[in-house]
Image (tube, rainbow, N blue to C red; front, side):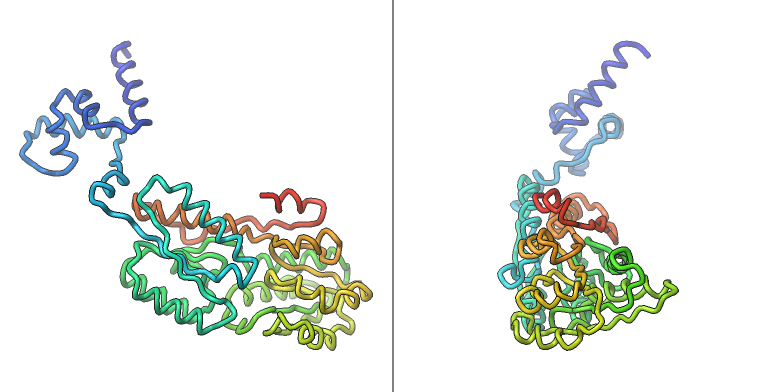
Length: 364
């Protein structure tokens, strides 16, 4: 290869990494800027020979249009609609909210804006009303926390009919074959909880699953976590009794105590299927410690971290909620601007948190 050819190829590679201008493309092709402009915008009125020279250069430099500049020129701002629970009602949702906002900062150089429609995740009516309101909106993409399975599936069907990209976080609907999901494999996390109980208490016989929150039969991630725990022990030779209780009003310490206390006889482990394991402390701490009952729950929110460090909770399973929000914004932005396909399933690793490694994960 001659030096001149090598230098030309090197120049093309360097330009390909930069924001190339019409003037630079014209110089490489040996044509006028007007000719390049006509090819880029399909305006016609150009000879086949000149068009071929320009297209050859575009191919060699792997040219991609500056989408954000094009949108700005059209005075077009794309909107991502955020439908998640209110953070002031549930501490867990402070983390996805933070991730979503950080994701928005990372793409702030693009003409992208967020519209928030938050709901009270302890009110089915609030979620349903929010979905109805969202149907009236005209977003370019949607990030959804599908709180209720049936209502979410109906909403997603209507959104897909409008050809609006949508991503779900925190809860996977079905097997993930119909709508993109970002988050943890809830079934697998339940199986891991079973493995941890088996390590904590060899030959364990009695486990209590506590679902803190209403209408859990319509919450797919809770269903999957419980199923995963049962699946692990189904493969064990020893018989393990696993019972489930629901606590709707988990803010009422007296109710929590009354519901759980009468079920504690013989219990060796308690599995709380969401971030509210800390609700057991005020209601039952002395009893649980006296009976040496091992606790496993989810999520690195401040009260849970405190109990983990104190030894009241044995393990927390980290669902990476902050990263879920950040990745969702990035994927939706890539879809809107660059037409990149969104993977149907983006699972995060299932982090097993103990008091000795907690600070590393919690500080992130």
